[in-house]
Image 1 (spheres, rainbow, N blue to C red):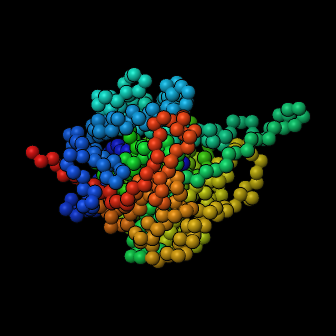
Image 2: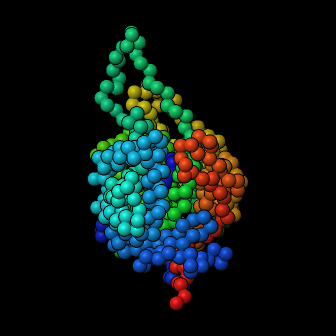
Image 3: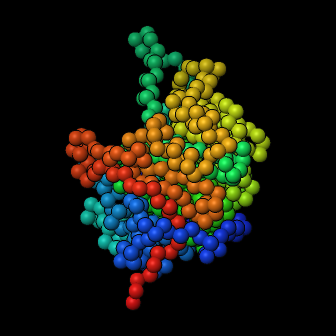
Length: 481
């Protein structure tokens, strides 16, 4: 993934069958004793609650869309207001309120009407719940467009590169200036963002799925990507995800649902923007709330895509033990499936992602629209992290398990001092909607802001490493009467 925000939950259209529940309540993973929250640390609002765990904020919401949203708004009001302030400053250091106003206008014009009504209801609930709990920005109430803007932030950040790749109709024509055609401006050097893997069958110790993801993004995102959301909608699957205050999806992205679907992504070079397509907010949320198979997830992610926030998705199905990798551009896409014995570089039972698209058509689609490059010269080339994943596979093939996953996310180049977190799970844990997770740099050293970052963002703070823990859906203890 590219930068970092989080996502949340919503219910969709009642056209999908009810989800298969893997574990009865008595079989669900327990909160590790060392992280069992004291009852005094649990904040409740109706059936919803939040509590701290090893740097994470665990949040449970349930019910109809507006109710779920209102619960989240009540529980995360302070954090929602703080995130808006931070994003506004990112938009305009000198005039945050003006920067946020322009971002809201963009989100309203381009994305709001491309989001499912169910998720708009949820976001309206978030806005009104947060406002009723005292949240505000620029001396006014939080409104629906504020919450849409938070959720659309990843797509807003992708617009510049998307527009570079979007034809305008003058491509191939020459317009001399001083007798010379203008050369396209060089693209900025690509930065590393997230890394992820999924393994099964011949690659793992027990032949079952192992799955993991690590987030690399800016330090301004750090205080807001530690929300672990447990969403129990009236319709569709119960699911958990890493999210952010005010989210209805997990822009990180890391999800598990109770139909046995595991889903995460890493960003790839941005492809064109289709203004007629639908926001990833809806498509990703639908995929995890209503997707019960790899086929369903692929369809829901790719149907009517607007192309923004182009990603390489890793998908697993615990019911069939199948894994898949989907590179999704705007019009181009490529799907690899373990059931078809489709592998990259011979990594049988193993897929990985690290911001380097493997499919030629997807790479070509991301080129600047005016670029005069030959596709046959754009073959996939391993970067340092690709080589690290291939080395990991060579070392652990047939032995990938919880220990190997943790090892992968503990050292460079797959983990960095500027990593925000790391998560991994096994089939047995995922059946219980549980995951291992650490918040903060998994390398163990604090990430401190620069003097410039402190000047531009007075609220910025160092990101401290936290111990590994197991995040679960086990309800916390009730307060004693």
